[in-house]
Length: 243
Image (cartoon, rainbow, N blue to C red):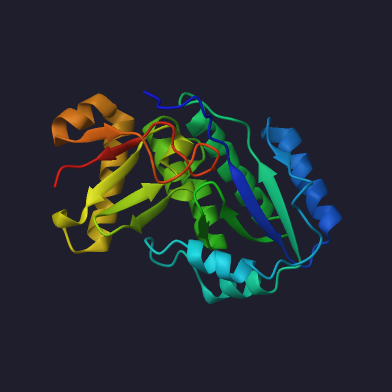
């Protein structure tokens, strides 16, 4: 089910180090030509210069769920970056989202082996350290179905994000499923609620939305936290778990 005709797409933010900007662009374009059809370098916002906003942006977006996802070396690499390259993915349907996210993850890992020093998924606002990006790419390599969807979701979705009443995910549209909203009445442990969000997402991939809604007494509602013109908007809505 979709609440909108909007098609999600990846926006990758890649920071360059000592490697010249032109060489990085050539390397990324070569990778796109080789295995990432439909992806493209955004010439409008990419720049051969550091962006002073990146340190704060990566700090806000870094993965705080997976232990060791971020290191001091990653922080230093962001602070010392020399260039910024944005890569746009193709518009995705629910049916091809996992495959395109797998390509995006492979592309990130490839660039980190070839001059890029830090990476962030802008479509959900999530950043991992170099080692974590590469570990997720290895986990996805050669997989299919639910086994592929999970590392892609962990790579490109941000959770948990909090309101006064819920902890929730952003970015599950990048694997073609609804977000998950977990009421804080279920637990005062953020990591436990984050694990619950992940468990429900896994169930949706394997069993489907309808079965999860029925089993958990949950509701599927449209997203109102983001506008349809924002990359974080999920056209598949959000599963609101019962308290």
